[in-house]
Length: 314
Image 1 (tube, one colour):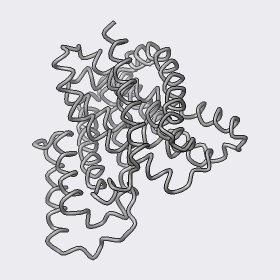
Image 2 (cartoon, helix red, strand yellow):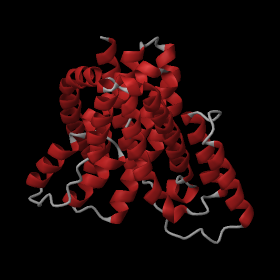
Image 3 (cartoon, one colour):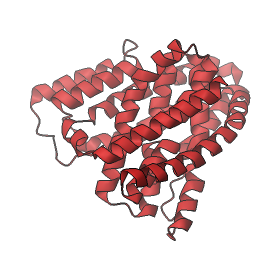
């Protein structure tokens, strides 16, 4: 969520508190969900002292962390999980986009915002919205409302999904698949899955990255429908990095210790990313999110979460 004002003139004590909270996220004592909660506390009650720079740091940090997580994966397992998730991904993508369009009309949400929220729900949250926005010629307000909706629901998912999974007695694999389909952003999927267990993390990360690749055909289809040239298509190159890391981990077992260090660095990078995401959610930003787009996002999220849960439990 972007800022409209520069907070670099914040009091020194606020800057020091922010840096101390950030430093704590470098330690094993702070888990991904706790890092997000800490970031939300800073963002809502104190404010990010360097908010204009937040978005510039989050994207490369998240992508780099995802690549490093690949060093904890086995390439054969990545292929198997990815292959199994293709059918579910295609069905959920088509169903979510259709349902989003219908709900948008029923709630009288403008079509562009409805498509943005639907795209973020169907694939990978903010990344999908950022890729689809230029094709739909979305203005700043439409982008802001859509991103705000997705970011708020992402924050909730990290706290809600692991306890729900435990209550429903989902296996590690079931939870990983469910989280990858039902949670919007890659960061939140990895955060929730890491909380649930190592196998859930592997499954959830792999399935989510496979879903991320569907940004490309979605942008191409929407560009044909809107008769726009998909000149700003953003190819998720970090997915390639993730696969190369998994290949190295599988083909060079003699470097197991080194790869373990890289994996730990990736998990810590994810924790820091979630802290920064939390700090970007402020009260003014929440007020800027429209009621109807938010209701649309919640309804879509509930349906996708419910249907995907039934699918993995069936």
